[in-house]
Length: 142
Image (cartoon, rainbow, N blue to C red; front, side, top):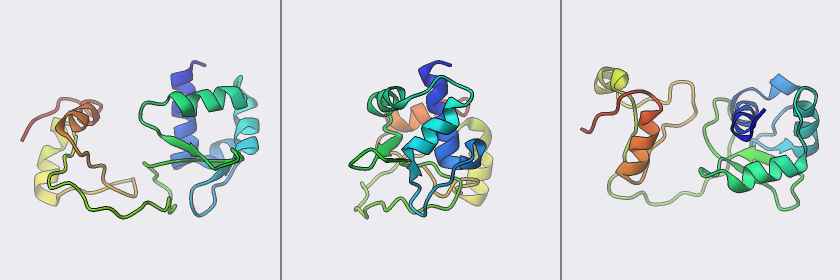
């Protein structure tokens, strides 16, 4: 399994389905690193060096270790109830939402909704929102 596929699998575990490998998350989304490695290693080549490389090189900074690297969590995108203890900040004057064309009518009627996630993803700039929206099909500027 390549690094991208492993990162996606870790995202699935830490954001949505820790039970996939028989682990659990605490109330703040933290998982025990040794348990994560053991659970993934059952079917895939995986160790702490691979995990550290994925965390270090992820361009979206999806994951964080605690200080002594005994715990790991996804930073955002959870569909399971966790409190990742985000700091409150004053948002920029304009925020952007990236989505696919097929969702525009629904957004116009219902507004932005997190659906299966805990939060709606907003971006601080148009470029990032376009990249996010491109994952959902054709993007429109409105």
